[in-house]
Structure formats: C-alpha cells, structure tokens
Image 1: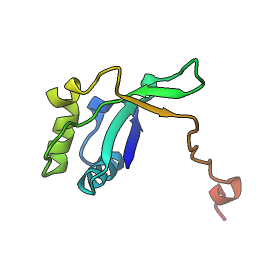
Image 2: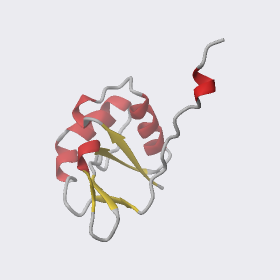
Image 3: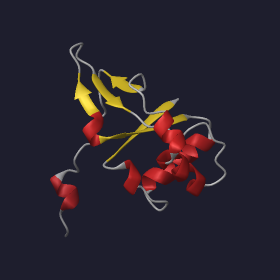
Length: 105
C-alpha cells in the first residue's frame, strides 16, 4: 500500500513524533511511504488534488533515526521529482470532535 503522510515541514520532523513512528512501522511492514508538505498540494485542471512528495529512499533502515536521516538526506532529494505525485479525487477528512465530547462535566 502507498501511504502519504502530510506534515507542515519535513526537515522539522523528529524521532518522537507520532508521524515518524507510524511511517517507520508502515515501512517495516513493506508499505511505500512518502511525505508531503501542506504547501506542496495543488488542484489541477483535471479536478485532482496533487502534491509533490518526498520518499526516504530505498533503505534499508534499521532504526527510526536512519529512516529520518534518509528522509532529510541526499537520498530524499534525489526522489523529489515532478513525476512523484500523490493524487486523489477524494480526501478523507478527519472529523472535528462533537461539541458534547469536548465538554467537561
């Protein structure tokens, strides 16, 4: 499965972020993992949402630290090309919690 993690800034990602844990675990399970920044999204003429993505590279990555180094290093820069796109006709939107669930008794 291809998984695209949307983050504010790829270079500010650190090892303790939940996104890093999820992405690394997905990588270990054999999924193709890419990252996209919020600023990289655009809406094309064919009514698709597109984003330029960054991959951590081919690996192997034996730790989260190596995974993040691959994401921020030269391997990642080599995979930043216009052909690498995350496209979708639909996006799953995280629902805002109901007001009642936010109220404290």
